[in-house]
Structure formats: C-alpha cells, structure tokens
Image 1 (cartoon, rainbow, N blue to C red):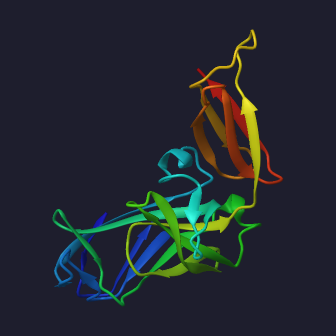
Image 2 (tube, rainbow, N blue to C red):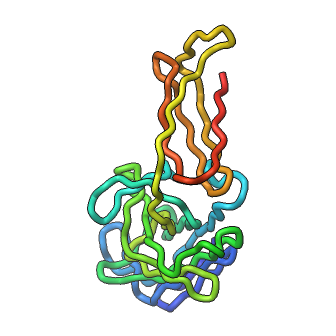
Length: 215
C-alpha cells in the first residue's frame, strides 16, 4: 500500500509483481478526472503457496469471451484497489494500465508464452475473460482497462468424478462436506453431498487429486 501522485506516471512494485499507471488516467466515482494524491493497495497471490484456494475469489470457473462457462487453472492473480480517502478511483474510459505477475517457479516449465487474463466480476460472482498477457523474462505482462482482481488463467480440460459418501454400515450420508485438493496442479474445491449422499465434481483431466469427506 502506498501513496501516489495521480498526475504522474507511477510504477508500483510488490511481491515480484508490478502495476504501471500513466499520469492523469484516473477518475473518481462520477467519472471526473482525478489528479490529487491517491492510495493504491495491491497484493499478489501465488497459486503454489499454501492457502491460495482460501484467498481465491469465487470458484475455479470463468466466463470466456464467447460467454461460455469454463474451468480455469490459475497461474497467479493480483488484487488492486485505488482510493481517494474512502472513495474508489478507477481508470478513465480509454485508459489502460500495465500489470506484471511473476510466473510461479513450480509452473515455469509448463507456462505458455501467452495466457488469457480474467477479472473477477463481483456482481456476477465469476471470473470474466478480457485480454491476455505475454511471458517476458519469467513474468506475465498485460494491459487492463479497470481494476479489481486480475487472474492469469488457462482454460482447463476437465473430467467428471461422481461419488457417494456412506457410513461404516453403508447408510448414505447427506449434507457431508467434500473437499478436493489437487496434487499436481493448483485447485481447491468444496461441496456438500445431496440427499442421497452423492456428489459430482469436475477435475483437471489426467491429473492427480485428493478427495476427502468430513462430517
């Protein structure tokens, strides 16, 4: 978190990530140009670190550019907020900012040279594809037109797993928490068994997962 002069070009570096803002590119909540001192707060989230699934907004599902719901695999995301006091600021219409996210070392060997960018739409409660980032010197660099949470994600081919939770005596158990933990990729999911103790979950194809039930 740091103060910036909105009339000037600004480079904000944090946790190996960066946000680059062009001077005079911010507006207030009414769309009026803002040129004073603003406070920017930004955090980078590495998918290979413990607790990533708890911090990840929504599910590992997004709306692609064709409007289809698709499973997504994250290569990291950032959350960015810019304020004047308690008032939110945004990029002006037609303005863009550059964002840079480090490629996690555990994913570097499989990281594509170009990856779709997705922002979290809080009204829809889902990730929405918008633009892309390119790999440059071990980091993903892209342009964004507004601020929220921005995610580098690949669309994931999935397989469906269905199961049923029963007691030691074979009685179906409804309302039981079922947790998915990916082993050789990064995903965390949680769901509840239905009235007959059954559940359905989508996982990355040709991958290893742990599925556990807890009462």
